[in-house]
Picture 1 (cartoon, rainbow, N blue to C red):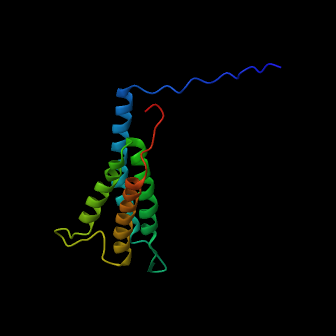
Picture 2: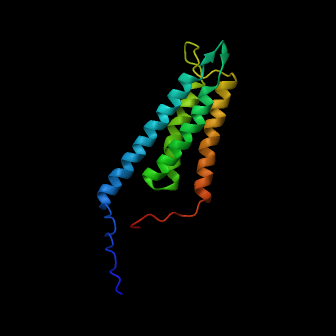
Length: 143
């Protein structure tokens, strides 16, 4: 009784170095822009109220979106330090929003939602970075 070996599929083709670099840089730029958009979205949701009471939707958005952005930045750029790409514009916008303008306006009030957004967002980025530091190096196909 003979067994005919099944035909094996060829290994996937690895993109050229130039294409790989362009994709990684593009992913990094997308992560930076998404980090800034995340901060703006959280600032818009911070004063959300239901029945006159603050609901804190911005806190949940800060946690969920910052986890997703950290993961995306790491996967798109392929480096552990990439988690800083969405974190930096997020921190800059949050610090700027917590300061008064020349007219006395403030975007991120010192109520429980404003404080919770900053703490939750910063903690999320810190935990994601810490997890990447502790993770064993990943082996990518073709590396």
